[in-house]
Length: 150
Image (cartoon, rainbow, N blue to C red; front, top):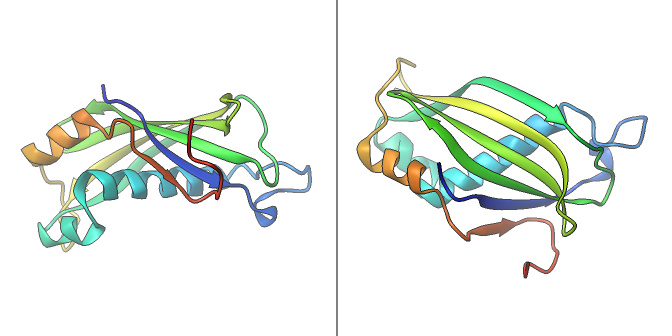
């Protein structure tokens, strides 16, 4: 539905398990980091959502792995909107090793727009719906310290 947005991060030693690979639960953290940068790119800082009496909550997350990631690998998380509902949206996050583009994992997360005070569902505002449909073509945010040229 949307053009992928890229978020890059470097695997830290403490994120690896006894087998020397990224511990499975860390991918939820990685997906959340990528989503935060995606939201910041589309909607401005998070306070902009709260100022509109809006918040988003994860209601579903699935992760499938294709290959291990290890300490000091740079992971690229490509984020795009996959589905838009009335109050919810689903994003896909494709993790790959950078710069080789070797697939590592795929996560699918569904978020619901809610009122921050009551936590009741709210419809996706039209301007935000358009932003989610468009995505963030060509935007790369990196916290990995690598050269950002593709």
